Image (cartoon, rainbow, N blue to C red; front, side):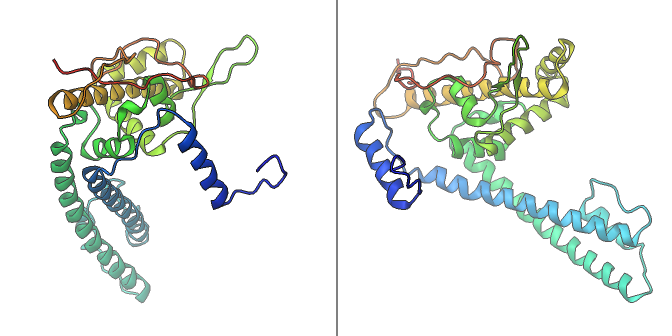
Length: 299
């Protein structure tokens, strides 16, 4: 199609390409309609939407309070705090009164969003717990992060090893070496939602005296910049998440029905904190035919 000079991407061309892959490629995995994951996706998307609404409303409220109160309000502002501040304002002109009324409406909207977010968190927490995942045991991953990992990753065994998983989620560094200078840069590719989960996980670990914080500090001491140290930390956390999900899949296979397979993973990560190692490899090379990650047989 492209050799003829047409170069057009159409639905018919896409369908033809997919048909070729489906009929000629070996080892393809069938699509499974997992109703539990579908439900989890609806809830986690809803929770994200509520968070975005909250951020937007707080931003609008800050703008109004800045015009109503000298100096405005503090950055981390709750609905109750905003209501208390607004109670001290008594504008006399029509513009000021309108600002105060709109601010009061925004505060009411914030209270409703907060209640809905709290209910969504509770429902999400219960549904994540029902999946049997242990992702929440990892420092820095909550119900929303665990749910996002489950719905985006699906079957973790589709990744042959941790390097492929890191390449998929965008934490594998890209080789940017030139001449004798050997360096890597941050990848902007990959699944950005999972990359965000790992970024939040790294940020949470940096706030406490965790091994993640110690790992970050060691990278800084070795001469890396803060951005490079954060990239290295996220790459290590990707390995940890991969190992945890493989362990969960193995446990589920051992206790559930169906056939069982052996496991061949190359991850050496055994805890929720990063350790020094050789995990900072860049993107894996060209794909070669190889068996997918399999699960351990039940004893």
